[in-house]
Amino acid sequence: AAWIAKAYGLADSGVALLIRLNCICALTAVVNGIFEQLLLCVNKQKTWFLFSVVGFFVQLSMTLAFIQKGLFAVPLASLCGALVLQFLCAMSYRNLTGQNSNPVA
Image (tube, rainbow, N blue to C red; front, side, top):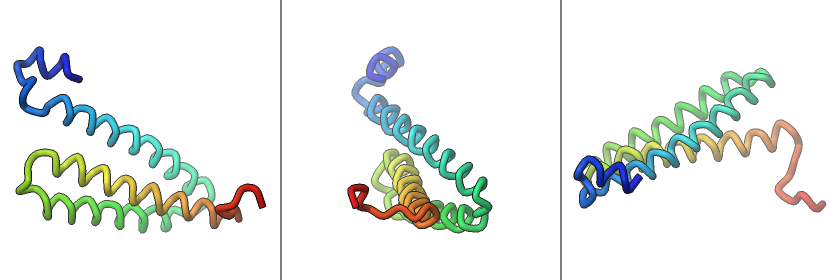
């Protein structure tokens, strides 16, 4: 990412960090896609929709709250929204499969 910023003459602008942050957002979105397919397979589309709405609301709220701070507010808000969605799906998956948080027991 740093070489891309240097190639465009933007080495001092934080573009490399922005690219890295967007890569993390993309990886989180991939995991959320897996959860989406899982909830679709177990016929929980309404649950997925509700979780998505909550995640997008978190993203929108954070973007509006921090957009004045700079460009990094958008990917950070996107990441937070995706992580909330991922957390809700993971908790839902545990309830669907009957797994508890203690794998030893």
